[in-house]
Length: 353
Image (cartoon, rainbow, N blue to C red; front, side, top):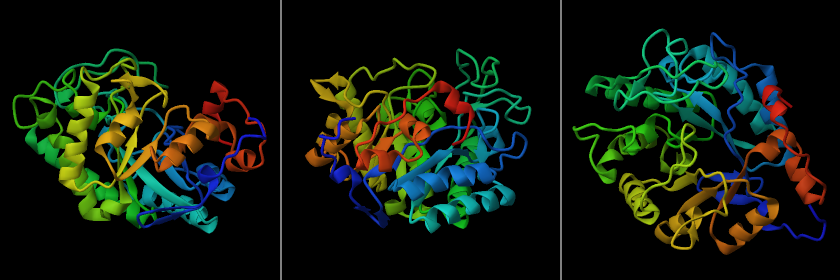
């Protein structure tokens, strides 16, 4: 990065709802799988990992995905937020982040069909429809299991688990919650016709398929409030990276209507490339801003200059940084001082720095 590039707003403090943030830099949720394999409890290494980013000046830390139940697990070593021991372990993380002046929200997660019965307690993964995903479970190396179509009772139990996870997040000292509704996981499986072939009120056209997502959002907002709730959504799926809505602008308009209906104020888009044009000469963020005048967290291989330009333009309100924050625990310091950023190496996925 050149020292002649002026990065101002990106590094300035931000006020978002009830959050007073150290900067406009957000830490994107980064699945690391460093919790205990059996208990889903995070250790002191995870405490230090997040503390360093807060000490560096990251404005909003969004945790790795934290599952709401054992049946919601999709990888070995993912953390949980459904036992007292898990809550106590995460409390150490939030205390460390707050001691450095940071703000941290828990990303609560259910992977749905993208799992294997060895990870879900010996039972089939849950999904809106009994359609098996193609490919292998990351870090396990075994094919995705055939899922079980969710009954109305299953849906209510999962909604209750989201509510409990939100309550547990507050008990653990988190400043809010991000609902993981993106990337082909459970909520997104309801949102997508490829994985949702239901004929009840949870199926149908896109507007109707968003019913489950809206119920989850209402459940979480009832616990933590709208100003401390974020919903993450996407077209892209981890098992189908090339997927895009047939009519992206119409899909975006439908999503925005759903978010407004349930009182959302903070949304977080997920896309690999922030600058990618997806429809009508516009990027995903430009399409969203056309229909949304509240908080947008942008992500997608964002450089400091892209972040600065998008913030100045009013296209986004926070810029979420992913892999560079794995490679550079001192990311904010480096950007502030015009220093070169270390390149991300895939091997860093297997170490916490």
